[in-house]
Length: 292
Image (cartoon, rainbow, N blue to C red):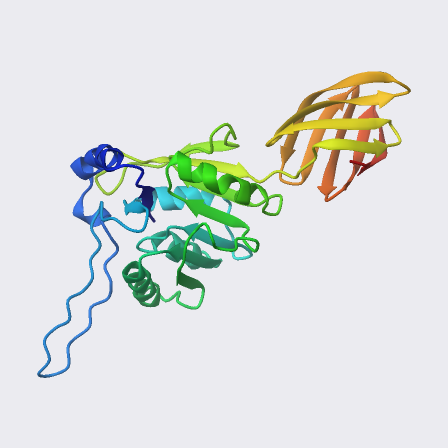
């Protein structure tokens, strides 16, 4: 991993100047396995990507292995996960995920990088779990993903954000350095400085929240949620009297909030929330269904 978006030539130059000044040759690419030419035939030129090389709409800068590890740690990636890396570059993030047992997919537009990644995965013994495809990241179906990693500039992240927010609640999104606009990260971490670079060491984690915006019916009264990503406010209407919510939080499909001295927690499944309501030391079941 990975790539940075090319908005203008000047933007690329500014972003790459710092990286090229500190990046060591080891950070530029994972070496592809060498092959010996047949007798009498000249050796084939081995493809070697260069930091800053242009692609369809991005330039390539690799993510350090230390940050790759940090990103996958923050995602709590396991063998049960389906991982997608958008703009997979030399394949190091996908290969690392596959080594952890996940089924990992690299989406990369440059066919030479795809071939390089496939050779590297075979060399590392994870070709059965690491798949690479020449594809456009905006057109790729991510519906199966449980973990998505990316290294893209904020404007590309914003273009992807609606698609990401439509993924299954609980899907973990981890970005190298760059944000999702006003969608605040759930967690931020920093990797150690390795491979001679102190640039691009920050990982940001988002947990795709369930969608709860709207009016819900419950035995406690009509509940109105006003959602902004993983945060929300709202009220409960009991006989025309409004009780306002506080401490509203979503983490994937888990919802918690307080209202009128009662602590609510539950699990969101489409248009239904089931959970518990605790008040005065007494816990009771809580059920809400979305009406609009």
